[in-house]
Image (cartoon, rainbow, N blue to C red):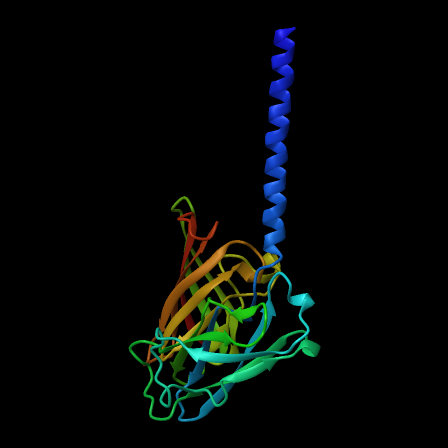
Length: 279
């Protein structure tokens, strides 16, 4: 009988301990609903590229209010945009912000945007290092809404005018996962898809029909120094495409070397060395 009594007491103790855990968990969840909402940038990083022609270029930066109770807000939210000390861009030389205040309105679902102007007058590209504009938000006078502690980084990239559109004869040396080497040739078109941004027709050793998605890969030009920014294979698959290249000033021929790795960040990669000769 004594043993039975001890067993019953033990079970009751365990049940009481679990009950306490449940109460604590529920309290934590309740507290989560009472946290501040944030006036936040839509993106954490922007790369904005323009040709250094002496002109000014204005672009929009999108903002929003997010958080646990933003749907319950009733008042408009005034936001001040602050320039962080980590900024290397020079005001009046690299950028200008004509109005650093905006209001995220309740009847606009707390979505809004402000403008940044990139300046190029007196800039001789390429620069040794692209200037960076780092911005933060500040909110005053609205209950349960504060500025987001996470900054926005804007890379201001100064480029040179290029004309890479056209048809090319391509020679590629392809090295597979096992180290086997293949020599491939084909003809393809390169098209412009942005400011100093171009898109090839093919990527890797596949044809466009093999892969589907968005054919080719995007590369960026900065005064004949080329970059294949990290991107998913044909904007569809988890395989990661990344590389660099250059342009022969005398001939205009393009040389690009890139890898296709899976998963991203691994050393399980295929390598491609490509020469594009314009027809």
